[in-house]
Image 1 (tube, rainbow, N blue to C red):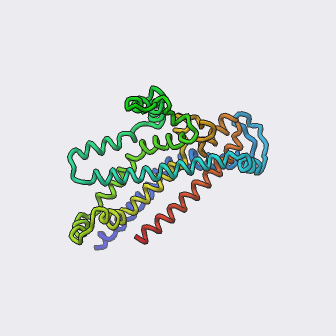
Image 2: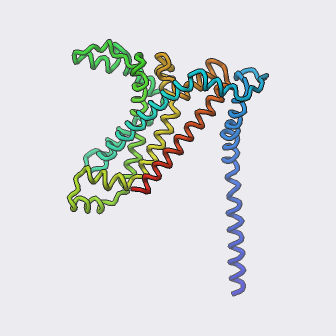
Image 3: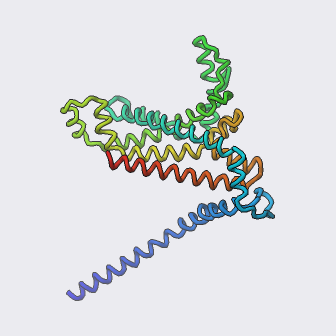
Length: 305
């Protein structure tokens, strides 16, 4: 009996030592996190109080002057407005479209596997490929949409959404929705498949209509999935840069200059890395605040539901 007890203690100690050794495998990942994320973020805050131009390291400390210039020259207001419009549009449309397609593909229809693949297919392309494809789709005169309009008797040559400052931002937002709604749909589909069929059958027996099944049963049961999708969409919308850079280069005028585009232009076109760093810090703080507020609100809604 004593020997068995000693063996158990020995075995327990060895397993404890083994589990402690497992933490050694965290060191490479932790080192990469510190080097490639924490250190650049600290550098960002450091450069934001200097007049560093990105080339010459003989820079001076300027305190909060970069922040004052960002707030006073109007670029923050314009880019913030564009980013908010873009984010609201993409979040709303991608979630509504993703939810609708997920609902349709969660039913017993033929070839639903093929339809799911087709819906998710745009998400597999890189942003630069999608941007160039849609640049040709939107091309005035000879683009796909312009040709379709001409074929039905309309003036396809006048169709130029990327060249109109009123429509350019919405045009690139549609591209974001087209590429991203497949990912949203997959997440919603995963949530819908966790809903117990017996609950839906009980609702049907009680006389619930299809809309009541969706609004009163399905949506409350997948509220955590809605939270995930909305937060991911909000973060993606607030970090928008790719399509405004690829398709319009911030134009026409300043109509598609988002926060991230303005940071890029300030740093690499104007060569004002210090001011761009201050812009990045403010954009970072703004994104964090919006995301946390959205998360708190949606979590509260989950509890209420």
